[in-house]
Image 1 (cartoon, one colour):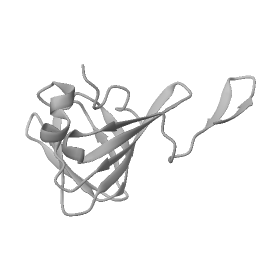
Image 2: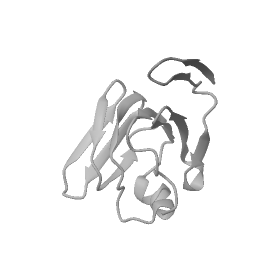
Image 3: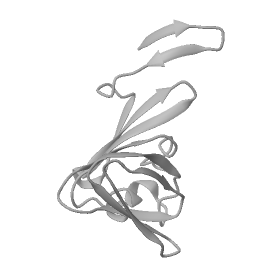
Image 4: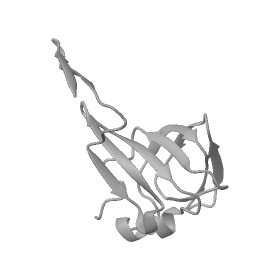
Length: 128
């Protein structure tokens, strides 16, 4: 990590190739690479074809639906999200997204979905 001190705090930089932590999903269907930087936690998610939150993260999280709030950008692939209230949306490469708590999600198609998540990673895919 490179640091330069200034009057407001510390500048920081991390490489996407060296996360602070990697959280693997059930059945090796992907992973969340976690970066702690400044006062924030950022995630780089990789979700393999066939990944579904209710099958590959729910056993880890122990909740009926994903209770994390996600805000980020899709770098590759496609993900479908269905809220507990029944509303649904697809997110694809180049989309900036917001997903409130209370959802299931799954990969659409045969391409790995890659994304950056700026808000929902601190406790994502961690046992309660």
